[in-house]
Image 1 (cartoon, rainbow, N blue to C red):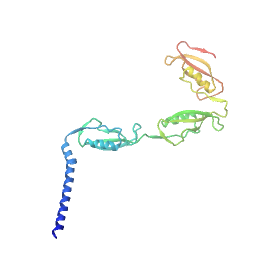
Image 2 (cartoon, rainbow, N blue to C red):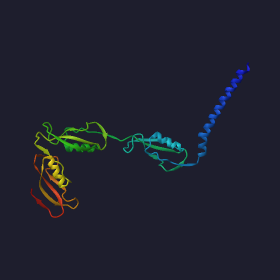
Image 3 (cartoon, one colour):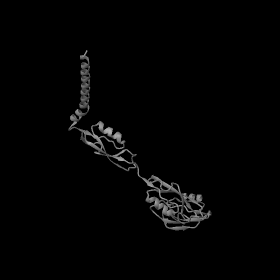
Image 4 (cartoon, one colour):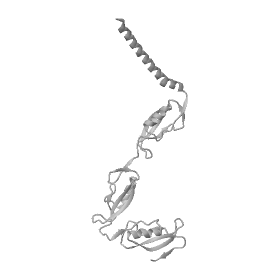
Length: 253
């Protein structure tokens, strides 16, 4: 009876040793032996650009390479967390175990929308360009408070973070009178399109001066008076300068 505890203890110890041996075997077989066998051998670097970091690390590990996160930088081509550059590049032949350095996208850099209210239309346009933004549609509104061509409101509030290249529309003052309308930009428009735009704006075509121009299509507006953004009385005629092939002449409407 006294021998049974000793036997059970020996049996338990033998089982533990067997389990440890099996674990050591699997470590040697799955980890150390492949690395020893692969030492000095080469493999092709897979393409992981565009993949997420975790996915890229797994892809590299599957072919015996070690992915290493190098840096994070802004990049509008790839979403945040995606690999944008890998070193060595895809297709390179390297030794097993080689490190592959991954540059990761931090996403697109956002810009701050500037305050436009109270600025002239020209100043607002320049301010948007400095921030990498674009001026969109300009609507006009009668205002007793703001002078002509002064910004009253903007479509995206100031200090808002947006992507570079975003279009910001504005509302500008046309002054205290509703009888005057803003003159649209007609430059580079065809004569037919110009007539349609002026009709919609409540204006008409005035004197047309034809000028020889071999770089643009005939019947294209190259200048106008009053200038774009100025205000004119409803029904006022807009003088146009239009291209033609031939001698310069003036036509009176």
